[in-house]
Image (cartoon, rainbow, N blue to C red):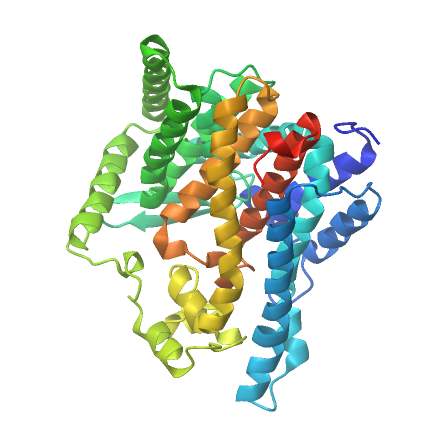
Length: 449
């Protein structure tokens, strides 16, 4: 079967995958999410993804780093299920319900499935992925914006007060893969590449960050600025532009910023002031450890939550193992907040040995990024523009992840959360795009290994 040939199996896979990531809380809107403790829609969708995977031609991996990365991810998950899910809980409590543990750990297994199954589909139909992703994201974001303006909610929306601004925060229940619009949108905006749906991708960038503004989420508002700096730095390294091209990129970026401010002014002018306050508050936290109101934010510290530190000190090598207290609001009440303190949670849950089992994945990932940036600089004009933009966007995504030290090893502690479904999915995309480049040049000499 030819690469990029669109047939029914590709549509089934990508549509099912987008539905699996639950953008905009679409599963809840359709009433198919399932109640707490019940079988979820994703339990069925994962079967669709696996069956789709079984019908495609298997992709042979040529790149050495790709093979090593996949091997170590599989090794880690074997350790994760055998030691974290089985041995450690049983050692601590001989009456531990192992069957219950594995039922709850199935979401971590789904992360592995997304990673493995996405590789051949990215190779086969990455163009179709972009189309399904962009159109579905635009529809959901437009529905969200209209619900904010009219009060008529097609998709579930949460509203809560952002105290230091005095404005309401407006959230979708879930964002799925849509935040990746920031990376791919900025890459499409800054790099001079003629790709299909480029204008729609930039519109997606605009809408996604309007949604972050309406949520008054400080880390995402500041994240747009940091991501733009990363993309621009990669642009300078790869393209080595002359002064006129640098000016052109700056002009495009300024034009986008003006368009963004105009759009926000039309939708809700007061949110401009609130966004500025949010950014100031974040900068103040980074500088002084507290926001403008004098409240401290322990999430920026390696060891801010005493409960997690206590658990790590009690069992530094193997951690707590699986314990359902990490999974719900009851646990958060006692300080088991893995959703906000990823690094600490990873240490407390998995211990040093669990962390070390995952460490090679980070090492290979960093090596891949360094080698691939060099490769892109050398062969920038020979790579298909669409692959180039998607590959750079994924690299930007992982660079941004690595810069967030408080989230290190999040895929170890939080793989049942949507954030790390996306992490593993894009890692599969990264492996696939590297293989596409390898197949195109058909020589190991022109591809980083």
